[in-house]
Amino acid sequence: MAKTTDLAGVVLRGAPRPSHDEVLTAEAIAFVAELERKFGLERRRLLARRGDIQRRLDAGWKPDFLPETKAIRDGDWRVAPIPRDIMDRRIEITGPTDRKMVINALNCGANVYMADFEDATTPSWDNLIEGQANLCDAVRRMIAFDDPETGRHYALNNKTAVLFVRPRGWHLPEKHLLIDGEPMSGALFDFGLFFFHNAEELVARGTAPYFYLPKIESHLEARLWNEVFLYAQEKLGLPKGTIRATVLIETIMAAFEMDEILWELRDHSAGLNCGRWDYIYSFIKKFAEDPACVMPDRAQVTMTSHFLRSYSLLLIKTCHRREIHAMGGMAAQIPIRDDPPANEAAMQKVRSDKLREAGDGHDGTWVAHPGLVAIAKEIFDREMPQPNQIARKRQDVHVSATQLLVVPEGAITEAGLRQNLNVGIGYIEAWLRGIGCVPLYHLMEDAATAEISRAQIWQWIRHGAKLEDGRTIDAALCGAILDEELATLRAGAHDGARYEDAASLFRGLIEAPSFPEFLTLPAYEIITAEGA
Image 1 (cartoon, rainbow, N blue to C red):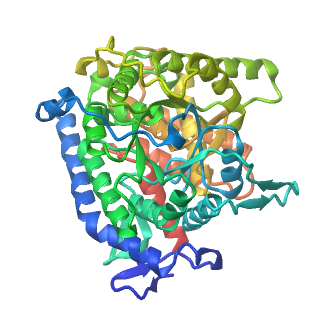
Image 2 (cartoon, rainbow, N blue to C red):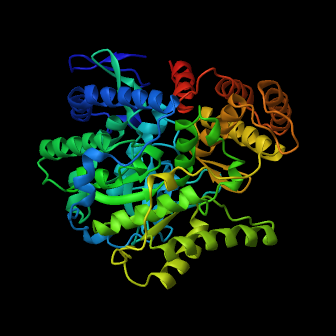
């Protein structure tokens, strides 16, 4: 139900809850509204620019390193010195912002916990505001939780991980807060609330407001974030450079502008990260209309694939040249407690992945489950006894634009098609119920996996790709297999499951005449319509 505020042109549409009052103060709403009014127009212009670039890609253009920014790439410059409390970031854990998760993640022994309002959170009003309240309590070390099912009490240890926060990407709106009649930016909403309530408290406690920035596609989008940071710091009377942000290089376009992104954020940079799953999705999305860019089963597209290995090595070289962290990617495995052989096989995959990252020169890595912290830490402690590997400049690495665009080879199998359908529907079903971080088949999945799954099928249908048994992948075949997978999922469904809704959305995405850019946009329309 919409509620006008005391601020002209500001309407709050989220359902009021007494527990929200400390987050949605008049001062906080005024702050985020000010951010929207100052930066919303440029955000929309940059999103339109993405559309222009996509049309060029659809017409056959291929990206390259920008000639107009060559001086930045060639220049001898450094980002601002690294704050002491994030000098060592060897193990980072990510996850949603529910209360128990926040406590467990801060306590798990990782160096950093990234609280995720983006791919691991369904952006329902309650999820967002309760997540902000949980982080406010965590910053002040006032957070606790009593599990009603087990009776267990959760509280913070004396030593906890350093907190980073990931707001939503530039493309996502926040429909629960209207500014001058339009939904505000989800990115500015998430950033603004957290920064307003916690920045001064964090500084007083010897740390600072640290962020991860997702889905950036150009240095111009990084420039906009930098302008937001400068403005927000000035409004709260904090020095320039108080904020630090790590940019996820999880789009193919950003891979060509890593130096430029660091340059734009140089006073506020905490480095770059290899967002591997979204990067694969971005590759499929950007070249969806190119029949030469059809990918094999996603299980065959690993970090040893030429285009992924090239981009990760380039990221390390770029960051270390600028004296800042180059963070590795996610291990999504979950310990398999009731099957020791399967668990050992899964953990061996984690070890191999982390050994590759440490050996290449990454300064740290991501895990999705507390049970993986010790495994990843053992490898990084052995391979990286110092706080980071920034001294390893990797001047032996030379990556061309062509190498970033090599399409991996492999087969398309019925098993791979079924996996995409099953996992895609399974994830969306949980997302629609408000759960954005979902354990499926011993992997912790977020929106990126569902994006890859539906993007691959759309691309296969679009270009009439063939299964290894010779069958052509078309809408009829995918629809028939979707129905079979839906029946399997429905047979094991619990009360309140939303597999029918998820399958309907998934079917619409893979059969769309043009490629839908983000599945979270139509999914968000569903949950906001239901909330209204």
